[in-house]
Image 1 (cartoon, helix red, strand yellow):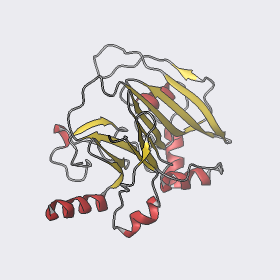
Image 2 (cartoon, rainbow, N blue to C red):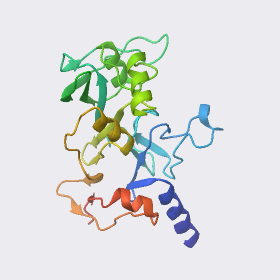
Image 3 (cartoon, one colour):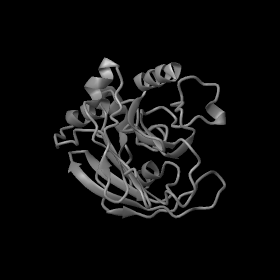
Image 4 (tube, rainbow, N blue to C red):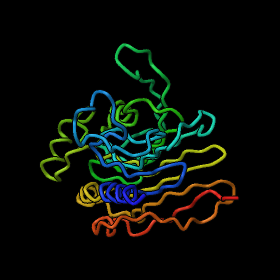
Length: 259
């Protein structure tokens, strides 16, 4: 048991644990990392979170930062039936529509699938905008970034679907080396719900301030689980790492009522 506790503390030092109970584990996934290791990346060190919980429920794609939710045991399709994701994006220009319904192929040679992205402009600058993009249900691969590309407002720093001029400027002037895209809110719901919220990380915030956006950001990363009228959990997960303590501060955690 002592060895298990030491391994858990070591894992907490390496990863930002937002929530943990007997059912789920929620981690903060940095950009450039897979939430779950697959066969293609199995022999590449440092490319996946290597979470002790084996079953991935929802997470942002590899180039995007944000919360990732895992289950300790297999979860039936009826248990978590609805997923809502809310992203913040810094894009070139300003989208002229509030919703994009362009169908997308999940892979090369595959038929188009329906895809819908709701858009809201949070801030507008001379040549860029901060956009909130929301998807519900199944999300197609790179759906947000592909839709912004189709609308002519590519995400800053996106080398695959972005604009070369905007990418060169964001890298040379602002030092942005990845897509300016962050999953700020993740909801999984049915009879019980998991709600995870996280502000954009420091590297993205620095770019945002540099382009002139000084709007107020959500200050605290939080994760809660509700079932009816949920009770406040005293199981606060903290890492002994000094840097993590400074970054995380505190998490309002909620858990299911126990009988």
